[in-house]
Length: 133
View 1 (tube, one colour):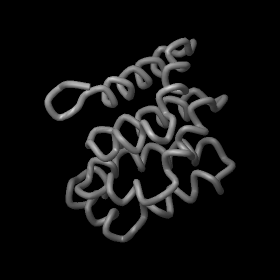
View 2: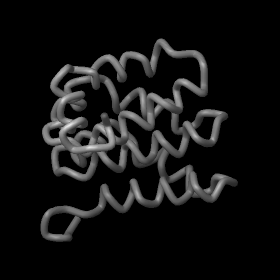
View 3: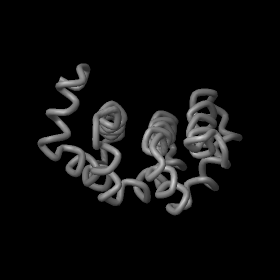
């Protein structure tokens, strides 16, 4: 369902995002956690998804995973932060949540994909509506 815009919106309308954010704490299996982070990333493309997810503790949870042992979890957490910060309210909330420092530290990660995700997230934070900081 999440491969299509209509499906994404339907999933968002059923309040699944809140459940997925809660699962970021509850889930102990890394493989399932990776799938949850991927699904959140896909859902963030939906209309009103950023507003909805910002009403949850998602930012602190994603920040916590930026230092995970599993490189896919680090990468997906950075990608999600970048997606959230695509909109101005997401930028402000992500900066206020203290995400810049851990994202900056990821620039020295040994995994290329993690460094690239951190760079994209930091670039997303820097771009405001008129292209100015």
